[in-house]
Length: 247
Image (tube, rainbow, N blue to C red; front, side, top):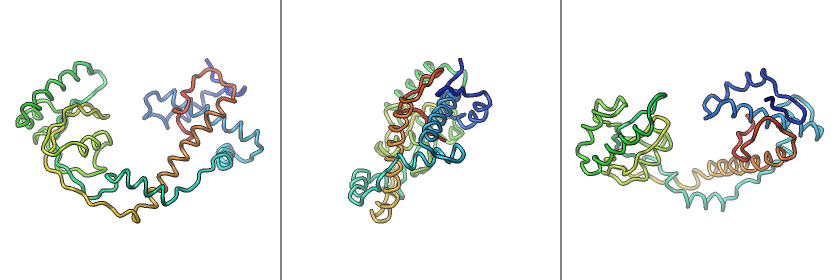
């Protein structure tokens, strides 16, 4: 079924050009087609408002006119800093061991999860057996050294793993399986080294930029919902505010 936006039918050639940019998406075809639809909607809106130039320039000028995001004030930045101080620690380290149950294309995920949970339950009651279990079960090269990853700091690993290791207590086995794009992890923590809090003045501009980007993204999502609602679109069901942004 063709996808048509305001009487414009999106072509196979456009999809072939767009698709490589979405290979990391859960559904690359849906993600690419959604991006094409949103871009077409914005181009049509820009044409309606009298903007000129190529399509990218029209969209840029349209969004510059429609999305006015104020700069974050010092008071707002300081409030953010006070509420999220762990994010501004430097030098914080934690010793980590883990066991990876890797998720591959043909794996039975339910069976893998049951196995991982069974091993985790045993290690919660017998944490001294962690290194032995890592050598037996882990799909990570660290299995050869009992699952030892050494000392990890912020930014050294994927977000889900990082959140788990820095929020748990030292010298403990995390009592749940931690899921990442690599698979299911059983994690044991050793010693923790406390970090140093970076002064507000050194991160104020960084906070302001981050808050402005977040505000812009929210404004863009709201604007996209409005223009999509005004457009005539057939052949695809968009996911509202969760649709990908224009790339």
